Structures are given as C-alpha cells and as structure tokens.
Length: 111
Image (cartoon, rainbow, N blue to C red):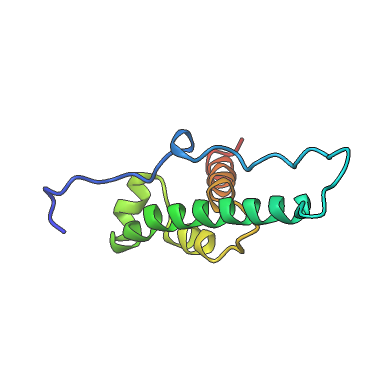
C-alpha cells in the first residue's frame, strides 16, 4: 500500500440491507401441502443474517491490512474489528461494533 492509494471506509448503516423479514401471517386453514411457515421464516431470517455477516466481513477484512494508526484515523481499532468478526451469526456485528465505538468514545471524552 502506498500513500497515494485512496482509503476506503467501511459501509455505513445507510448502505446496509433492509431489516429481516417479518414473521409470517397466520393462515386460517392449512392445505395438506402447506409448509410450516415458522420454518420458512426461520430459514429466511438465517439467510438474511448470513448475507449481512458476509457483507460485513467483505467490508472489514481489508481494513485489517492497514496499520493501527491508519485504522485509528478511520475511527476503528484493530481489537474492535477482530472482536466483531468473531461474534456469532445471531448477533449483528455492525450494530455491535457501532455500540462498542460509541462506548469507547464516551470513555475517551468522559461524558
């Protein structure tokens, strides 16, 4: 990496995919071939979480190649990024990272 390469900040919350799908509505009656709606909803939610985590990893892994001073200028810390990348799939890594950054800023600024 040279000093002339542009820095790329990770995608912000505005660039994130839409929220997870809502739970399915209850049917008044079931036909014999009607699949269980809770199962379909669980699979859709898992797939949404998996895609969101892959997108997060795709945007955050390249940042680990920078040194700590550059990461700090971008507003990240290496240990925070590594922590967020190790979170389980059921937790939203982007929101957890933003909350940890806000907590760190409160401690640093003393508010």
